[in-house]
Amino acid sequence: MTAVHIPGVPVIDAGQLVSTSPATGAEAGRLPVATDADVRQAVESARAAGEWWAGLGFTGRRQRMLRWRALLAKRIEQLAELVHVEGGKPTADAIVEIVTAIEHIDWAARNAGRVLGPRRVRSRLILAEFSGHLEYQPHGVVGVIGPWNYPVFTPIGSAAYALAAGNAVVLKPSEYTPAVGQWLVDSFAEVVPEQPVFTAVHGLGDVGAALCHSGVDKLAFTGSTATARKVMAACAETLTPVLIEGGGKDAMIVDSDADLDAAAEACVWGGMTNAGQTCIGIERVYAVDAVFDAFVDKVVTRAGRLTVGPEGTDIGPITMPKQIDVIRRHIDAAITSGGRAVLGGPSAVQPPYVHPTVLVDVPEESAAVREETFGPTLTISRVRDADEAVTRANALSYGLGGSVFGRRRAVATARRLRSGMASINSTLTFAGMSTLPFGGVGDSGFGRIHGEDGLREFGRAKAITRRRARSLLPSMTFERTPADVARLVKAIKVMYGR
Ligand code: NDP
Image (cartoon, rainbow, N blue to C red):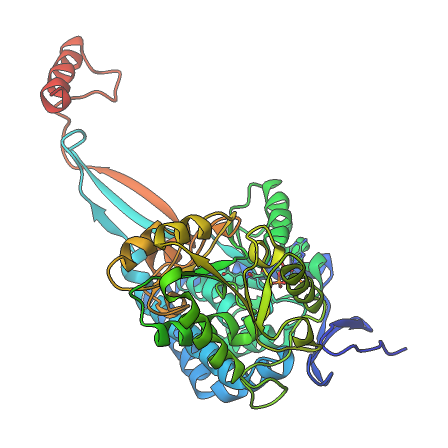
C-alpha cells in the first residue's frame, strides 16, 4: 500500500522516508529509515573512519575539505534546486545559504591547524622549570542533528568545523529535508571515498534519539528548545557533551538617529527572508517614539511589495505545514489582545503560504511577542528610548541574535543585548562571518559554532607539561624539605602578598 502524501509532510513508505515539496507535493527524496542497530553501526564505522581521518593531520584534511568546498561551489545551482524543491525555499535564498556554508567550510579547513594544532604555552615563575604544551584533539565521532529551515548552512556549521578538527561526523538531517542531508554526505564521499568519515542516518525524531544513545563522543544539536531538552536529557545518561543551538525570538532596535530606509530594508529582509523561518530572524522590533511612525510606513511599503508563491518569488511556502497553525495563532492572539495589522493579518494565512504581516500595538505578553512564530510576520513596538528597547528585548528567556540601527549609541546598545550575537546597521550578517562565533544564551542554547570558538568546540583541550630543568623550589614531591617549604612561603609572599 502506498502512503498518502500531504504536500510537505514527510511519510514513511515501505521503510523509506519520503520528503515532498510543501508547494507542489512533488516527491523530493526517498531514503531508507535507519533502525537503532543501523545508527549504532553507522557510529561504529565512523569511529574507525575517524581514526583514519584524524591521522591525515591538518594538512591532509585541509586539502580534502577544500576539494569538497570546490565541488559545492561548482554544483551550487544543483544543490539550490534540491533545497528549493524539498523545503520550498526560493532558489535565490538557497543560493545565499549555500554560499555562506561554502565560506564556512573554506575558513574551517584553512584555520583548523592554526587554532587547534600543538603549541607551546608560556609557563610562569611557579613551575618555571617546566614547559607547557597545548593542543586540541578530536573527540572521535560527532553526531550532528539538524533542522529543516537551513538544511545546508546549519549542519555544515557544525559538521565542517567538526571535520576540520579531525572528527568523523554522523548526521541526522531533519525528516523534512533528508535529501539535502544525503546530498551533502554524498558530495563529501566523492572527495573522501576511502572511509565513511561523514555519513547520514535518516528517519523521524526517534532516529535522532537513537543517535544520542549511540555512543557518539559529542552531539551537536540544532533545533527547537523543546527538543534540545530531550537531547540533553538523553545525552546526560552517558555524560555525552552537547552543543545546543536552539530557537530564538530576535529583536531589532531602531534608535532615533537610525537611517530609516536602511533599517526598514534590513528589517524586512531579516524578518521575512525564507518566509521568516530563520532561527536568527527578526521577529520583534522596538522603534523609538521619534521615528516609529516613519519607520513603520517604510517597513509596510517594502514588505507590501514582496511576492509570494511557489516559483521566482520573494517568499515561498511554509516548509512545515503544522507551523501554519502556530503562525495563525500568533497573528490572532496579537489582534485579539489589542494589536493592529498594518499589513496582512489573519487573512494573510493562505496555506501553504503566509503573506507578509506587520503588527503594531501588540502587548508584550502576547504570544506574537514572546514565542517563536517562524513566519513572515513582524511586531513593531513603540518605545521611549534605546534603554527601554533593550529592557524589552532582554525580557525573554531566548537570547540568540539581534540587531541595532542607529549611530551614537549603537555599539553600546548591541553590547547590552542579552544575546550571543548582534549586527549593527544590518540584520543576520554575523551568521556569514566565518571568523565570528555563532550561538546563543538562555533558551537559545550554549556552545559555539563558527570561528575559532567553533573549532575549539569540536576539539578536546589536551594539556602537557614537560620538565626542562631541576626544580629550584621543589614542592610537588615528598623529597621536599621543611626549608624548601619555608622558601616557597617566602617566595609566594614576595610575589603575591602585596
Ligand atoms: P526540532 O527541534 O523539531 O527538530 C530538530 C531535529 O531534532 C530534527 O532533525 C528532528 O528530527 C530531531 N529530533 C526530534 N526529536 C528528537 C529527539 N527526541 N531526540 C533527538 N533528535 C530529535 O526543530 P526543527 O527541525 O523544527 O527546527 C526549527 C527550530 O530550529 C527552530 O526553533 C529554530 O529556531 C531552530 N534553529 C536554530 C538554529 C541555531 O543555530 N540556533 C538554526 C536553525 C534553526 P525530525 O525532523 O525527524 O523530527
